[in-house]
Length: 256
Figure 1 (tube, rainbow, N blue to C red):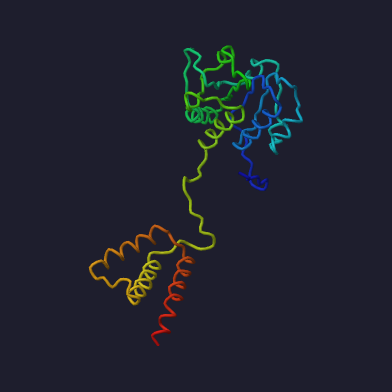
Figure 2: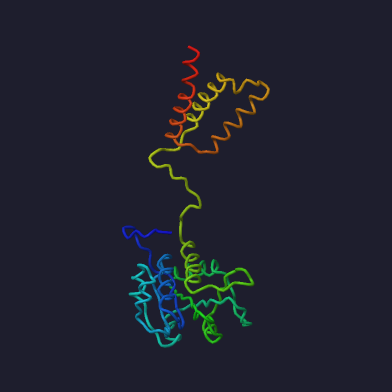
């Protein structure tokens, strides 16, 4: 989905994203893009196979340059997480370790609280081919596992970063779950809607559509319910008034 607008505020901060021995510059770039989508800007690279900086990473980042420009290179994982107080490690496989396992949503909520309290957090992501080693996981307090299809739960690097980054972002986002933009027109009031009902029902009576007196009450209720569900705006009701008038006009002329 296209949605880049540099005129709008940029969200930054959040947990560090630590890529351990990433293999391809393109994957680093797409992971950086996923990070910036979610307002994450602290990228740490541990021994990237193809070196750093990377032109392929920049091309694949598609404009997430602020993340790549701030990226830090480390020789060891110990050094990359040295300033952190809480480390989460991602894996899709059961490692048979006595270590707490959480979902991305749970991890995001926890990190929001920890970072809010001034405690630095980071998330480890392993190499594309095999993921993190058990030795890497031993440096983390908590494992993050994404609940997916048990027979096919492997994610590529950017997917994993985006999924966990999205949970981080939405854990602190106040966007309502549903909105109905109405442009320059306000939602119609009940009084305006009732006037419309009167106009519509008057013309339906005149046309003979509501001639069955026994069925008329239920037909009127059904019609009203239909327009109640539509959540019409003032402008939409004015348009509907015009439609009814236009359709009724020729019948008036014929009668005259």
